[in-house]
Image 1 (cartoon, helix red, strand yellow):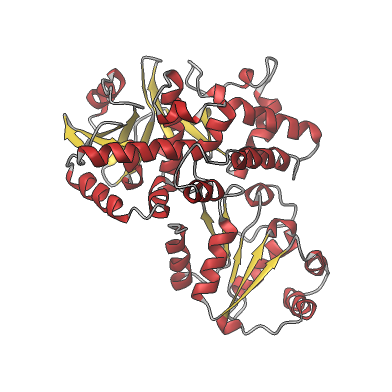
Image 2: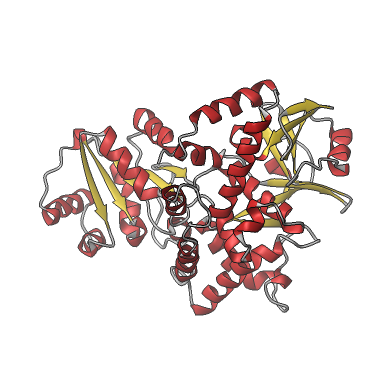
Length: 433
């Protein structure tokens, strides 16, 4: 399957390859697959080293010798001779060796043409909790996310549909009603399976028949996530708290308070008791934080309140599975309250894929804007509706008070531009750059 991050890997190769590249993302999103494909396609020689399979290399990098000597010993152990000029090395599961991570500074500074790319499970957590020094400024970091809706259409070989979406979005032209309905159906299908490559591959192999989809794939991913919560923790109590926060998120999204509440995790929970566990989840990128904007000023990140926030799951398919929602209720649009919550989580994941920071706004509990983004047009409000009922007091309040260049309303309604509000269907979020 095509992944848009491939273009960013190409950009690294062209402009910044002297710095080792670290790709960070939640487990099971396809990091290893796309990096392998990149290495095999773009370089004459490629060496793949999975540290899970080579504990001896971990031992080598623990030795009190120079990094270059460690590298030479690694070559002897692997029984290979490396043509540095034409070879890229992919260290997978690099989180297993703090010493190798620290050694990336050497590979960056050495005059020899090292080409290094790295990834790993829960690598973000490990980087946050390293005991050795991290080579700040000597590596390039790249975030990767689950398959977004545009990539889902690519996997469906729907490039003509993508082109038509782009045309309608750029020119505020309504999509042909038949195609609009088709795309909304594909959107609901995407909600069911989410953006995990294995899930999408299974759906496509079954001709997009949701009745034939193997939902145990998502169940297995959730179970692997819960098992991962025992890794890189200080003690068992911390892993219990991590799991408790994670499992509370689906119900937290339905809070009337419009923010994450520790009391919803446990009746006696306090912030100071769960901060470390929350930080673990955020570092893992299995959940994402959306902070409230206290003041609508540029730059918005300078005016957010980090203690007032929402949490979203990294994948909408996982959200549906945790809520145990029947796929038929999504496909036939039978949900009421949680339809909006699911759409909101979906929008959050799509905005992240487009490299937006997650920020929202509210005013004295009288008005709330689901997301605000900061682009060349300034601070732009985004309101999310799960259907075509687009009346909104909150968006009107925001537009009158702050007078942005325009507002964006995401819904099942067709493309259009009216009363300074750009209407964007739920299937076109990949164009909100």
